[in-house]
Structure formats: structure tokens, C-alpha cells
Length: 142
Image (cartoon, rainbow, N blue to C red):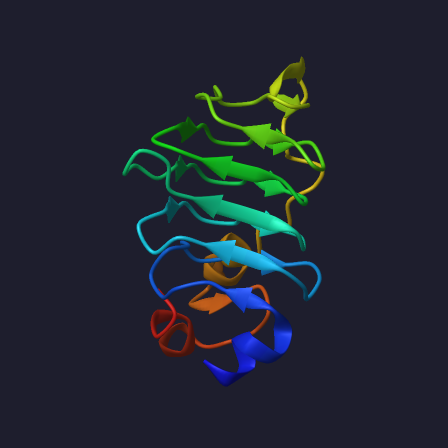
């Protein structure tokens, strides 16, 4: 908890799937009921919270730079959210959204912005990961 205070994070346990990447320290606030898939990348000034008693559900490989997301919305997989966007409606997979309120601005997905470190660590060749870690070391993270 002390580290999160020093870095400016309010991120409860078990909200994000494996592969979370936090690009910068700074104000990041996430409600405990939010659920986020694997390989999410977030930057500072992100707020993901509750509205009318409901919280967002966010898919895999989502890039969130300084945006606000709230309410019972669903963000699809491979989504890029523009900086400072305010997202209060569902977002389909494989698009880029931006603006206030956020709307689709491109058919480009997040594939060029996300480092899928979790998947890379779990990919094994001859019983070893690409990084050379033994299978037992990888299992403790999955």
C-alpha cells in the first residue's frame, strides 16, 4: 500500500489480468469492482470508476492513456482509447476511440501499442520460455 501511495496509484488487487503495464507513475485510480483483461497498458491520469452503481468491464490488449472510463460499460479487445477521452458508452473490439464523449475515430486496433509480455513469458519452446525461464518459474505467475 505504501508503494502505491508514493507512486500515486489506487489500484486494488485482482482487478487487472496478467500483463498489466503502467507506463508512468502518477494519478491512476481504479475502482475495486472494475474488471480488466490481460495485457492492459495504462498511463497516468487514468480514472476507471463507478457510475450508478456499475463499473466498466475492459477486454484484453487495451491501451488507456490518461482517459476516464465510468459506468456499466464494456470495452472490447484490442481497443485504443485516445488521451483525455471520456468513455461512458460501450466500445466494440479492434477500434480507436477518442473525444469527450468518446466516439470511434479509427478502425485501427491497439496491436502496435501493446507489449504482450504475459503471452511472451508463457510461450514455451522445448519446456522453456523464450526468455529461458524454466516451466516451474512461469507456472507461479499463471
